[in-house]
Length: 207
Image 1 (cartoon, helix red, strand yellow):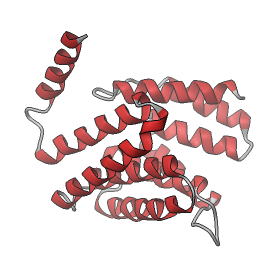
Image 2 (cartoon, rainbow, N blue to C red):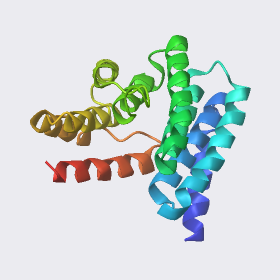
Image 3 (cartoon, rainbow, N blue to C red):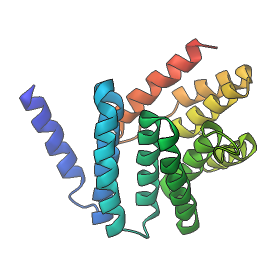
Image 4 (cartoon, one colour):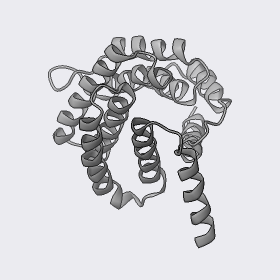
């Protein structure tokens, strides 16, 4: 087991040798997020994401004009909000929303349009006025923008499929989610892809 982990660490290190500092930072956030979300015990996730939020803030201060970094801090904030729950989570998702909007201004196609995917997911999961900023209409707009940029992406299709379930459009949701399962594996995102596929399978089992 020890040998296995040494090999994985060596592989990650070698993949970052020629990466720019901001890319190394983003890869570190991506990897930590996936480990916490898909491998950490449920009762530890909130505390672990709280620590990752603090780490992402430090990295964002180093690279405030990097759209990719802003997107990943927003994703981490949103995931932490989901673990935290309650009204205390609303401030977190509001900050995530602002970061995603800023990243779109910097580069709307960053990370294959992930800002649109994440923004769309916030709009259909956050309560509407007067509690929050949720809007199914805006959710559909942003999720469809994400699909135009990345029509075959696992995340863009997963979140649109989940949204369609919320809209009770189960037939279309099934088609979209099945397409999500056909997405190619992303280099360096093996853990995230495995976890996302499991989530897709769970959703499909409900249709």
